[in-house]
Image (cartoon, rainbow over the protein chains, first blue to last red):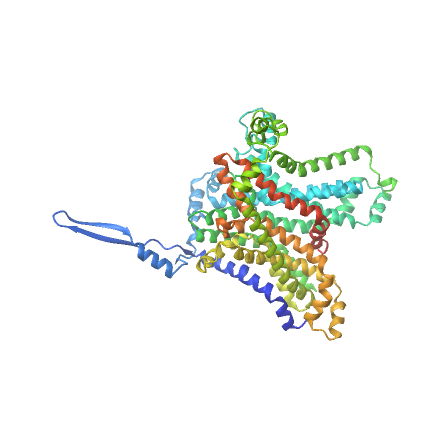
Length: 341
Length: 293
């Protein structure tokens, strides 16, 4: 295809991505180094005869509005927003480091800082959910593959539901069930033998609840991909393994899993990216008191009456850096493959 | 079909069936439970006294004289005007799918037919864009949208969702077009067609399976989005998902949780139908990227 033809074919989609993905990234980076203008103060001296003069400091509404309209971005503050308490919190970090005698103290100091708390949950969620859903998805795929044909179709239909359903809605459905008055919640209360038992009350249980939701939501994806991979498994390999006397477990370990390995890499890559952006479950499970994620912090800063664009932008930039770090092994590998060609 | 050696011992068979049954319950039960419960009153759905009330609807019987009630649906659809959000959702989804497929098809086709080095870089850029959480971009939208006075309306959201959709659409359609033999459009060009005519008359008639599959995923992205629609739409233009999120805030205090339950069931129903009719396409779409590596 000629360059010119290619250009015209690619123009609409390229323009859409340039204007609404590439430019916003630039604009987020710029916003993150600007802070909103401080209100302009003016001092007025009121002199009344006999009493004397008093000075009064008020906000000069007009001047404030003027400067805000003239420079909507705000004032340049450099990396200040990144270093403040809501983000990297360098000062607080140094204090916690100096004042704490052992690692435990330091960690608890760290978890009081919003960004590190969110980062801890986001990373825990990502790196526990991803391997779990791969194992679980593989187990479902192997089990469903051994069913007869009619049951397979039915199972695939119902398995797709947790994945297809809107994440916020899916988490609400589960949230209502694990509510202490809901069906699973009351069963757990009965099991625990404690009428005040609640999944929502403790940080640890909230994390477990969110992780269970994450696996429930994403395992179908792994299942469908692995199931499709199983259909392409050559029969003669399995037969050869059987003739060599491999047990069922050995067949899975040495024939099936190596055959599915490229798919495992694919699922892991997609799910690392998707789990890192975990957000809807935190809202749906109403879990912000115990578990926050990076995306949730951005959402929280942007919402409400005071839209804290600068704070949200700084968190956004840090999140993008996080995604880049997660993605870098893949990019390096793709680059090597490309060079090799 | 299965040879004798393949046949499972009974113990393993029971174990596998048990596991499939367990997964079936995990996957399907929450939906049926919520669907059933949405026709009850709150004291039955969230039953402190006895969980079987949610099945029999004892309190619902006491309140309405029969064990099922549409009060939640009435409250959500009529009182809270959920139908507006439903219409908004379908408007947004329709335009997102149409626009996204039109420009994505052209772009994906071009990427699959050009052999220059920049196609690789464009695809890698798209992959990076695909990896970024959409919420990180929202902070970048707000200021310009306020300045131009286009915040809060549906067309803005449609365009943003189309753009966020593009990386995925491009990857999917690119791999799909690569499976259509190049000889097809090249022979058309030999016969004197321009590239666009070759695309229009030769490729368009055979591309529908791939386009429909991609369209399904565009639809799901637009339908399921919460982060972008919640931040970019004003209260009167909300789509279903942010509307449900907004319900939560008000209903928990007013004791109208059943409105939210009814709205959730209403929003799940179209997805249920979608999976029923397009199961094959969804499965093939999910595996398309994977099998190719």
